[in-house]
Length: 174
Image 1 (tube, rainbow, N blue to C red):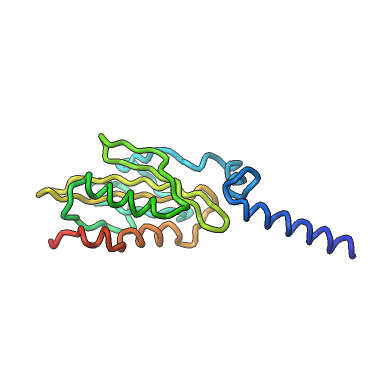
Image 2: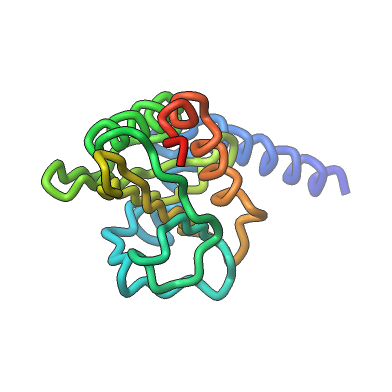
């Protein structure tokens, strides 16, 4: 029995080291690479099929996305360039986020955002869209790599960005 308790203790200690190493070699962030690449690739918003497990979140104007959305974004009194730059600055203020790809021509960014403790990788695609009269709006799709449910993490994250004062102050007074 004593040997079993020691084995459990050693296993718990090893698991703790893996979690604490985060994204370093041998860390929990690297374990998820066994499931697939953290960056899940580009999103085609016009032909997007939502995941059945609800481990994603979609914010999109109706005319841009065919899939059912969680939120319709507001119109912003900013150019699409300004809007994407503001969103980029607030996303990258999170030390657990990194820019995976960007296209200035398409006003499109893709990020990998990791959860703080277990380092689950989520891929986030954001596109800034012109919305008339010099304004713009956003399409954002955030999706988990691991699991069939994210306990609402992706939707909470996107709602947090949309509620950030840096974006709220840019909202148009339509």
